[in-house]
Image (cartoon, rainbow, N blue to C red):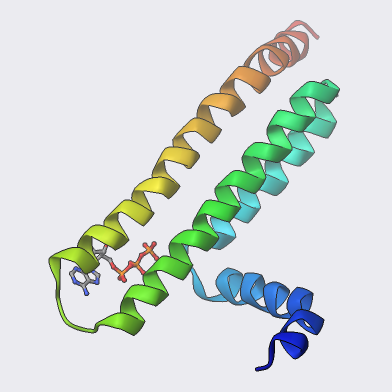
Length: 127
Ligand SMILES: Nc1ncnc2c1ncn2[C@@H]1O[C@H](COP(=O)(O)OP(=O)(O)OP(=O)(O)O)[C@@H](O)[C@H]1O
């Protein structure tokens, strides 16, 4: 594909890549479902503007890291179908990046939602 043609279709090919990863990567539906759940929780608990910024950035980071992990997995598979320690290392490190961002996302979720959830539970309990 020529560079001009590529740049014309840039948005379309990028979107196709995202949709393909959503369809084909088994963890992606989980990340998206959790993201949607967090947005609903943010709306329900009326979180602050700064909390929205952190929450949306965190969701974007987890999904982006999963997309990069998928791209690395496919690149490794393109380079070699043989068992190789570097192929293992590349895939394991890429998977590690997803685990790190997901773990921090859980911590951020707890920091944002712990107090409003506890307050809400107390209100429900006292009714
Ligand atoms: N060519 C290879 N050589 C050595 N080890 C490999 C190779 N391909 C995969 N592995 C090992 O198998 C693991 C799983 O690789 P695979 O390509 O199946 O990823 P996956 O299960 O699709 O990952 P995900 O869970 O993110 O979807 C890798 O993390 C790596 O440890």
